[in-house]
Structures are given as C-alpha cells and as structure tokens.
Image 1: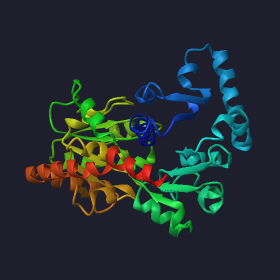
Image 2: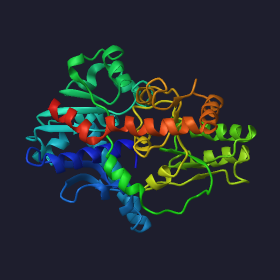
Image 3: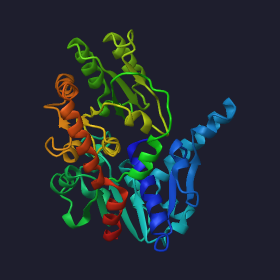
Length: 368
C-alpha cells in the first residue's frame, strides 16, 4: 500500500493502456499479495515466487507454519543464488526491458532477466536501513540505467556514489490525476465535522508521525482548534497511540489513524491542509496526490522530495526545520489565513500537472 507500489501500478497501467502495441507488460512479484492488486488492468499477467499473507490467514496453524518456513527458504535461496531466477523464469531473459522497482531488491539486478535493466531508486540511499549496500558501485554492475525520482537522489548518485551521469535518468514518480479525482468523489462518513489536517504514509519513524502528533498538541496549547487524520498502517501504530495518550490527544478524540485504505482520496479531498512530516523521503507521492485535489501543503524540509515539489514555498509551505515546533508554526500560519489557504490550494492544482502520468510517462518512454 506504499507510494512506490502506487507508482508502479500507474506505470504498468499507462504502458498497457497507451502503448500496448509497442510493449507487452508483465509484473513479477516476490510475494503475491497487497490491496493494490485490484488497481491493475485486468489483462496484466502476473508471476510470483510465493503467495502472500492473505493466503496464510486462510490456512490452519500447522499449514501457516510450514508455509512460512517454505517462504523463508525460497527467499534465502533466490537472494543467495540469483541464477535461480534465470532457471525458473527464463521467459523473461529475452524481454527488452527489466524494471527493478524497489531498491532493497538490488540483488535482483544480478540476474540475466531482461536485455536492459533499469533500477528505480525510490528513497534517500544514505538513510535507508541497508545503506551499506549502496556505498560502492557494485550494485550497478549489471544495470544499464538508474532512475532517480528527484533532484536530490540524482545528485546523490552522481556525487556521493560517483555514478556516471549518463547512467542516471531523472524521472519524477507519476500520479494518475484523473483516477484520483474520480475516486475522491465517492461518499464517505467523515471522522470530524470540523477543520482537520490529513497526512498519509507508513507508520514508521521515517514518516515522522510522532512529530506531527506533537505539533497537534502544540496547536491545542496555542488555542488552535483543528483535528488530525493519519491515513496508513505500520509497525509504529502502538507507539503512536501511546504518544497520543501522553499528549492528551486521546481524551478529546483529536486524531484518528485509519489503517490501510484502498481509497483514501475522499478523506484528503475534504481536509483543510495536507501535512508531510517526514524525516527523509525520495519524492513524496502522497504530497502530489493531495495537490491534484487542490489541498494546501505544509511539509518538513526533509531530504529530498518535498522541497523540490514545493519550490521555496511557491506551491506550499516548508517548515524551518524538522521539528514539532516549526511544523506547528507553519500549520498555524496557514490555518489563520484564508488568503493563504486559497492561494496554496490553487498552487497545488497547478503544480500537480507536472507529475501527472501523461506527462511523466512520456519522459520514461522517450528514454527507452
């Protein structure tokens, strides 16, 4: 349900819809699972190593245990011996292009699948958990081109990692604006009948939702009456609930964590401000999605994407630093100015056109 998965589906559907005569697109998954699978065009072929957790939940305890062991063994073997891909998925060897979408799977590039291999870099490689893998150029040894989704990632690749510029393509992640706007029209039961902020992403430290909750508490201290909806799920759910309780945000029901949602767009469309509280990021698909719904943006100045999207406060507000206090100040400034809210709502729509799949898709097509 993450931003990278949404982007992947946007590209697949774009190629399949508008370039079907030129490209035969198939999707290979390590694990066949995820709520976003329903968003794929029906005629997309899918291959995978093993089925996902949805399948495990339907089995009895013994079957679940044995299947988990099977998955671990299969994963280990394919990671340690990438040649197995060539053996079991030999049909892909003669495909013209192989797009490897998640940087954590860079070892997949060691295979011979695809005549040309493109590795998508979705995040700040200096911050991800397995960053040690990217401190040398070994991961590019079997790659024809790396795709950087933001200026920050592009500059990091060619300066810090010393990758030749001709090997790197700058291509922002796209959004499907028409689809998002259509989905945003669906009816929903609002969580709050008053002003509310909204944010979206995995509940992990990178996304800074702890900072966002602290900024909400500071807004309350400053007599700013606003609620908060966080759209997402993840490992920090209980930590965030504990933090909210310690900040006295539970008693008055000042915020809601929705969990994973296939259609979050009605909630975003009816919000007052979209807030990105990330500590680091690649680009921020969620900001671009909110922008195409005319929602004003407030973001931390995290590396890399938000600053590039917002362009020195031209299309939103960037807080002075990555902290709860500065985030609170920026949110408060925008909430207290109807003129600013209207200005940045219009600016959001204008900026979102740059990231629409019909524009970004052409960049990728022209690079092939």
